[in-house]
Amino acid sequence: MHFEHPASRYQEPPLLNPIVVIPARMAATRLPGKPLADIAGKPMIVHMLDRAREAGIGPVAVACGDPEIAAAVRAAGGTAVLTDPALPSGSDRVHAALAALDPDGRHDVVVNLQGDFPTMDPGGLRLVITPLQDPAIDIGTLVVPIRDDTEANTASFVKAACAFADGQTIAPALYFSRQPIPWGSGPRWHHVGIYAYRRAALDRFVSLPPSPLERRESLEQLRALEDGMRIACVRMEHGPFGVDTPEDLERARALLA
Image (cartoon, rainbow, N blue to C red; front, side, top):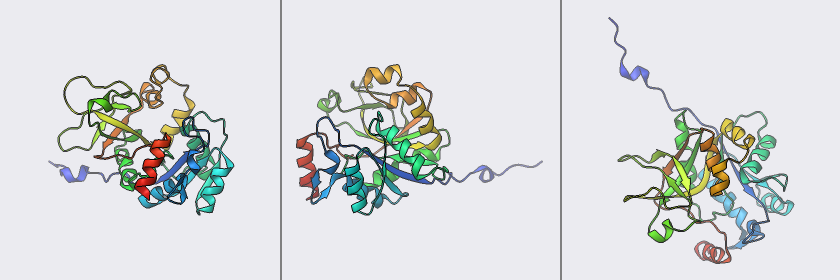
């Protein structure tokens, strides 16, 4: 009788071939012209380009809604793709840029890196692709601990309902909300809106209409969950802060001075 050795069933995790795309447009509601805001002598979008290059996970490009952003990126030696300014979201902008950057689909994973995290630790970008080592996961994203009830009850701090087993750093995302979920004692997790999509998952995502819960919570990741896609969260101790207001911009300038 032949017994199969357990080691013979072990499979190496799949080798991923990511590309990082940063969507950027000038028409931010609270901070117009945000991508070109000067921080320590460089436009914010160039800081994002630098953070993505420092992560070293693959080529980096900026999906630009405006020619002046493309000019700043190219002046810094970066790759810029002009996209239709009327596209409804950053995900649509990333998808449109990919069609020009990689029409043959050589990159099987795309990291959608928001253009307003200039203090981002490049290690977070390396982490966000790790859930995709599991073939059952469609999208990876990041969470950090919520420190207090004020954060938990602030609608702009998006909460992820996920629970990490002892010693684990990856957990399935069951829901996202602006409300302080889940109920009861225990850790709560603040969602950091950086995503690693399988290429097929992004294709599928942008083909779907906005879903009922997405419209209700104003959170586009709920479209993926409502369609049955699987999202997994990676926990980090400290996340980047997004630059959304003039006060945020001054804080970023002080940190990067």
